[in-house]
Length: 498
Image 1 (cartoon, rainbow, N blue to C red):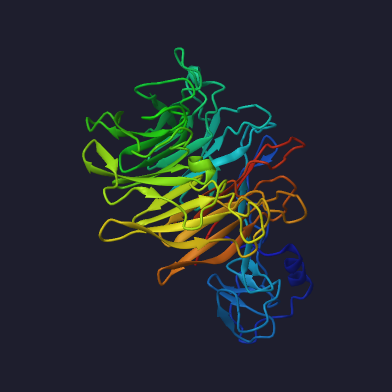
Image 2 (cartoon, rainbow, N blue to C red; image 1 turned 90 degrees about the vertical axis):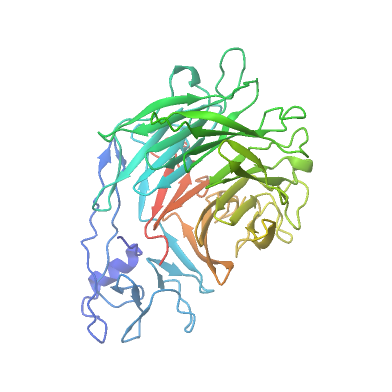
């Protein structure tokens, strides 16, 4: 477990060793040395920034409590709202801003072992337990890196990049491999929606990788639609859960005409060969040309949610499907179409979707917040006991920024992460930010802001978010490294919540 402290405060600790908590409460200490590994000149390991043994603002008395200046005891962790909040008040390794909101920076940063210009490492991220997969495939300057990277956490809690880079078998080269990724257990799925095969340009494909007993990952299957067509964009979104893979194909003609979109569902054949076969094509009865159904997708247990952000002049919508029998998927009988209660044209509702149990999160990154254009919003929906689905909340950032595109989402139990990759920390900077919302008494509220420690213009921190257990990943595909533009990076927050 690592906690971040501002370097300036660590310096004060060295200069003022005589200061201490009045009750002599033991304080954790750390050498503050860089414990990360280096690969080709890039820091690919975890970074430990150290802890102080002095009771100045921000000193830790215990991993779960904080010691504030002028107090003789250690207070419960969190922002002390009963006293004036200061910029150096600790909140689980971060600080409090003037309003009492927790603000925290990363505990580590990852980069690709073979990083190159325009890779956009971190364009998509996924994590499950001790394994994470990072996509590299954003079409910056029309260049696709066509790769994905796996990181593994050892028994000591340290993360490292697994030897070997995931790449597609020949036909998908240059097809945007890595722009969508997901992982469950020992299975990784990676979309390449620009792949062409036979005479179908940009039909798309999805690649399945499995982890062997020796710990290496190898491609085991390439999935394509049973009816591939040009411009289908199969693989624009992918999700895996409970032995099923959902694949969005937002350019598919569906049952109406061009770009209505649909979702394909693949199921483990149950023969012990770990082979997936197509079992369903999910369409909607009220679909129209240009809806883009399948632009986003998620799966949980026997339910699939899919976004259609271009529906109704980009006002957007989303649909919920259920598995009623093995191999049989249909629109939710109680009504599958979901819309924002205050939706407006060009909001892009459905650009990102997330599903966990009875709770759904759907983002509209181009929604206005008051007079703030394209600030973004996230809508929470709940499935009721009668199987109807109702909107319960509209979430926005506490500090909405114009063009922030608040909307990349990850939903895990009572925690919701939201990225705003074009948030301006200074004018027109697009440095980005992420937010953690926590649910209590049935409602989500903003709990803390997540920043990069040393942000730079164009980072796009928050373009992708993921979480598992106490670990959160924030993708920043616009990070410049080694004098190269848009190399990209992923930032780790651990622990992400109390």
